[in-house]
Amino acid sequence: MENAIEVKGLLKSYGKLEVLKGVDFSVGRGSIFALLGSNGAGKTTVVRILSTLLKPDGGTATVNGFEVQAEPAKVRGSISLTGQFAAVDEVLTGRENLILVGKLRRVGHPGQVADDLLTRFGLTDAGGRRVGTYSGGMRRRLDIAMSLIGNPPVIFLDEPTTGLDPEARLEVWKEIQELAGGGTTVLLTTQYLEEAEKLADRIAILHQGTIIVSGTLAELRAMLPPAQVEYVERQPTLEEIFLAIIGNGAQR
Amino acid sequence: MTDTTVMLGRSIKHVTRSVDTIITVTITPIAMLLLFRYVFGGAIQAGTDNYTNYLMPGVLLIAIASGVSYTGFRLFSDMQSGIFERFHSMPITRSSVLWGHVLTSLVSNAISAAVIVLVGLGIGFRSSAGPLAWLAVIGILAVFTLALTWVAVIAGLNASTPDGAAAFSYPLVFLPFVSSAFVPTETMPGPVRAFAENQPVTSIVNTIRALLEQQPVGNDIWVALAWCAGVLVVAYGFAMLVYKRKIA
Ligand SMILES: Nc1ncnc2c1ncn2[C@@H]1O[C@H](COP(=O)(O)OP(=O)(O)OP(=O)(O)O)[C@@H](O)[C@H]1O
Ligand SMILES: [Mg+2]
Image 1 (cartoon, rainbow over the protein chains, first blue to last red):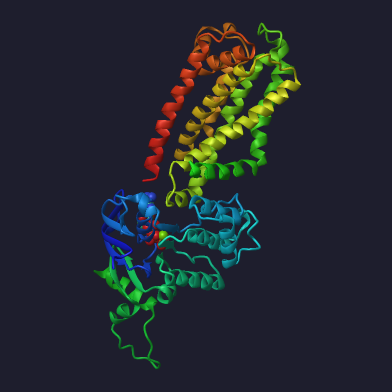
Image 2 (image 1 turned 180 degrees about the horizontal axis):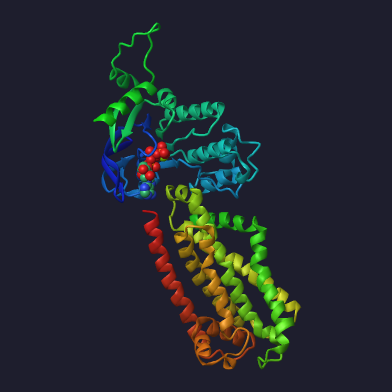
């Protein structure tokens, strides 16, 4: 089956700074794909290109079968973006924010959709309050809820759980898993390796402008020398794999 | 069209929920109206028996010129907050993001103009103009508002600070003072008079004044409309250019 996201040879520079130097990856339909990388590796840049907010300098990117530069309107009809920083309207209430997105996406009964999402994200009590009074975590949950309206087939989540408390993080993880279970394709970036380990079907590491490794967690594990003689034999965590690979990459 | 309506509804809420901006937009022109009517008015020889009538058009233009600065400010805030990017990643007509703000400017400036006219009526403003003349006055003010609002859009898109997004309106607010808005241009020294008589505010003020007094508008109305339409077309074109560059 055709992949939901297909990225080939993606290039992007900001002035002299080459951020993406030929990025390749693909994401199967209904799967969760985690893009890892250090600060400044270019994860947000990839997400912004895939959501038609930024033009690449070269290469191709296809989302839901549509090329991002050739058919940007069709790409936008297929996606939903939760950017790295909460994109909510501070003057409106939480409920009004959800209704706003619902109306723009032409869903039937936007008010009902809004109430439903407020309940799912534990914001019912705060729904009638201006978002300007929300805590960082509440804003983030509202932000994610806004992205679920209209059931787009592909969802981008740029560091979705940064700043959330453990309970809220588990809640968001559950939502993401339910989305994928329902056939939605999820591309997420994260700094929490545990998050990628827990959620992702496939993981890719973006480092110095290219994807240096990608695969399932088991495949990434197989890349490390297994014999770690300890009192208790254990699998290396993704964090160890990550640091080992980044370390290798830096010395190349 | 629907996207623009939704965006308009959102932006109108921003206006109605910041009562302080509504007050600033109407209070300053009203203060000016009172100042000229009751403090300077007695000493000004405008050759008219109702100086409040004489003042009205200029005060309305000042209100609009300061009112549009909030459009620049609101647009700038949107770009800062990331909601701009959310809208642009959604399947909507992209330009509705700008049109929502532009139409809001029309609505909010119409409200403040109406309030100022009401205050004017309270202190002696009278007009015998019929519905057609009033319609023409509203039309000219609307085109003037639209033109300045697109200038505000350029400022909002290019600004790097909230103050920068609003600062463009200071010189615009000043223009009516060097025009026929408060004193006849004949009293000004040569070069100032030349400037005053050839800048847009004078022809707009003269047109509105003539319409309200049921006098012939002469050439002024065409000069006024040409200025407004010219600024509107150029500002709109430039704003769209800047906008397309901003959103990739
Ligand atoms: N508009 C811009 N102009 C200039 N440089 C930029 C711009 N946007 C991003 N960069 C640079 O590109 C690089 C990649 O940025 P990007 O935001 O994609 O990284 P990231 O992987 O998302 O990092 P983080 O984990 O900190 O969010 C950084 O060095 C950043 O400074
Ligand atoms: Mg980032």
